[in-house]
Image (tube, rainbow, N blue to C red; front, top):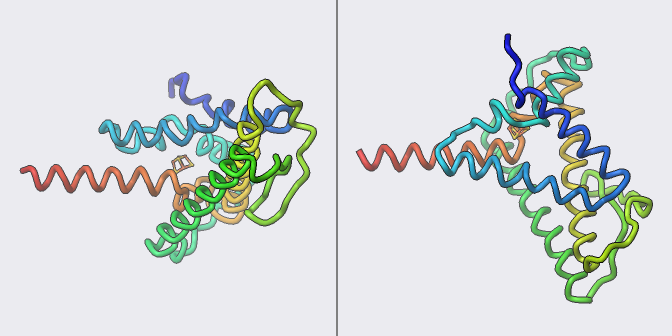
Length: 195
Ligand code: SF4
């Protein structure tokens, strides 16, 4: 099958994760993976991001499929349930708001910059080697540490799910996937009403 440029976006995802080990400020690039899927679905592109442009999904496919790192088992039914998917999305958003709050505390001078990456919302890993000081205010770096924590945590969860189940099992409960699905459903509902 003919390959397209977007079939190689997994390289972007892999390089993104690596860059976070050298300069944490590259974490800002991850916002692309937040806004692009939402913009595509809001503009009527449906799940095109998931189906075509998501480098992370491709990376799991590659590691679990081509490299054989997945057990290729079915994901349990409870993980597919609405309760789990929406529950995980809510938890994820609460933690995201908490990350923004921590950024605000540094921006307002109420807290000092913390050069740590928090894995799985629990484990605080020293990450000072990836911050070299910048012209920007400390909150810019605080956001980077927080956002990179989100990206690394979701990658780790995705890898564990990939190994235990099928390569793209993370996609079943990925918050971005759930949000774009909600947007598609809302748009389809509006279209129905308009008929
Ligand atoms: S569900 Fe998430 S990880 Fe999977 S393809 Fe969509 S955005 Fe990417």
